[in-house]
Image (tube, rainbow, N blue to C red):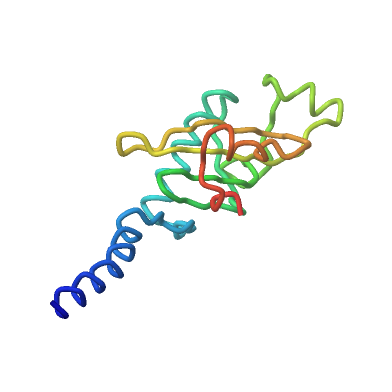
Length: 145
């Protein structure tokens, strides 16, 4: 009887440990430069941005975090040569002329059926548009830090 009680006690103590492992969330991390994951993220974003601005673009990234199938990226869009983008002929032209444009971007992506998809992005915002994205899209808070 003593061994049965001891076994029950030990199992009761281990169940929360294993349950925690089963449902543990991954920690936010930054994909390494040159990795396939980083390339897939930037290619997905590039496709959306190039479709909008109708010119080739690369991204100088200053923040990239991935967690639980979500990614947040922040940086500066550039020409492939590294020069600033020209936004003539885009919806950003007027904002630039009126001084309401900061040359940066932020983007939220989600992995769906094994591929990264752009959920939303902003270019040139003069505020911090991603402050509500965690709640609006139910994205993990760790990717924004």
